[in-house]
Length: 228
Image (cartoon, rainbow, N blue to C red; front, top):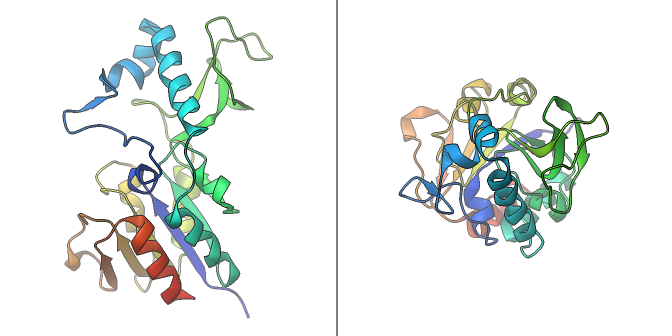
């Protein structure tokens, strides 16, 4: 018998519980920086040292945090379902928890690429410095999708959503596009669970929507237990 498919869409909320700071504070600043200074091609062109240092700090922080109960519960789903995780997060906590199939929409802190060669990535576990070059001689940068850049994994994510039997949305405001549009691509019969302390999708949005107004570490194990 063919296994049902669960597509999981995760955002900053699930990582915040592991101690990773969410994408931006209420004042719109990210670690005290204007977003465009540290997360845009223009910012990188203007001050590459600042941008590299910013992501070097994020990467170092990754070594100090661990997957939480929400990440770990998702791994259990693979016992019974085909599971695809589509994450907006750039950390590697899903991988470290043991999930097998992960699509990173916004890139990965643990990878880097040459400025001129966006499609060839390299593993990255230490700091990137000015003058560090890829094999083709181009300055290395974090493998992160910045504002104003294409989101190359969106078509792949849409394909996965097209065939979802169950959709889990965890720890995301569903306000950031194009990721927020993914819910529009799941079939009408798909059962949707929305797990977030402050869920922002109206109940009328989907005819089979269950809202679990809890943090991921609490809500995800509950939903997983129900599905298993």
